[in-house]
Amino acid sequence: MDALLRLLMGPWTTYILWTLRQHGPLRFGAIKRKVRGISSRMLTERLRTLEEAQVVFREYRPSIPPEVTYGLTQRGLELREVLDALDTLARRWNAENGDKETPISDSALSVIN
Image (cartoon, rainbow, N blue to C red; front, side, top):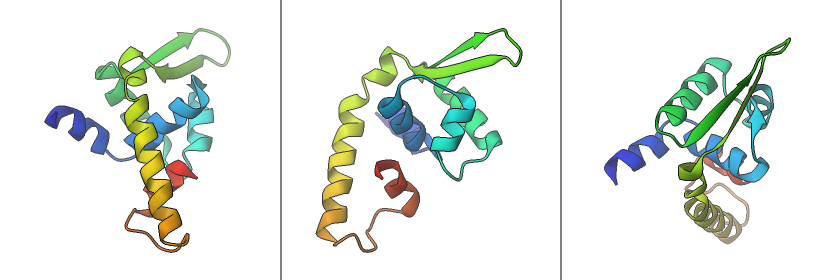
């Protein structure tokens, strides 16, 4: 369990996974637009880490410009229930606090908004 939690705790990781969960496979630029505030370097690093962990797949299509699409693998899809449960909990906490500042960080809240 420790290895999985360490993977998920990486910067931007849950936001990237949530984005792919919500929208399905996306090209790099689309992920970057949806994950507001992430740098290209950080997104590349996180996607590589998730690909190495076999949570995200990378599909390369040689074209001009090259097309690279990322999506959830079977392992990534197994995180659906966890991501959905976190979404439900975050929304409830947000509602209980009257949409005011919550114990959840702004970057985590942006995942659910």
